[in-house]
Image (cartoon, rainbow, N blue to C red; front, top):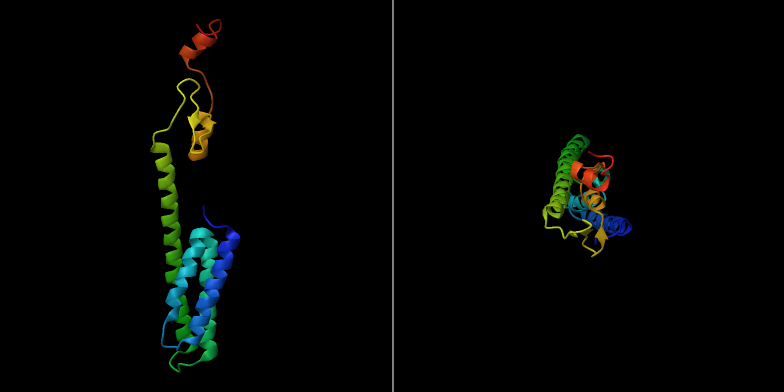
Length: 168
């Protein structure tokens, strides 16, 4: 069972705070922002793309502000700091995009596995036993596990059997 969104937000805020603090206390020559990818990946996986992009912008923005405010390295001008911010933003954005693609493929694989597996079905009423052991209508089960929708009709054989007066 995945963690609740409130737990994820709390853990991501805590992790991000720790990483920003570690980045603050390390010397300028140590490139700590690469570790910022961890909360960005977790935010993307558990919360979504918008949140992943949001964490990217906030964390890299804080880093950019720290570099400009501290000014420890005379070679690190605002232009260089801005260029590094832009490069990191592009790379982290690509990672968010790729993470969302991997997550979507994993979810799709799970859905395909569900639909391609052997389904226990009642030979009389055609209900399917779900993973909880309850029996569901065939249409309900397939609709819940795929994009398929149903419209009901009647084949000629059933029409003749159930409505012999109306179906020749």
